[in-house]
Image 1 (cartoon, rainbow, N blue to C red):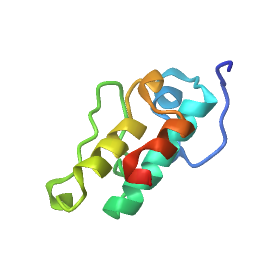
Image 2: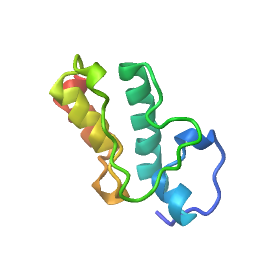
Image 3: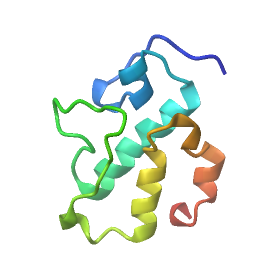
Length: 101
């Protein structure tokens, strides 16, 4: 899988490495986008506020008012949105996660 330099899509769903470095790998970037979607569905808001710049070292935190999310769901969202693309799960790993079953 070679790095990609160009992307098409909604800017708020584009992976961290594409935003910060100008390149990305397709599979981990897809997982990032799925993480944004899962966070949005579970928390009823986007992971990052409109206009907020995502940067290396930016830690995703789930607001206290979303205490109702199970620890497993919170862990899954954080795994999808790992800062380093190599730490994100593969699609196969996601389907095996107990929360997804």
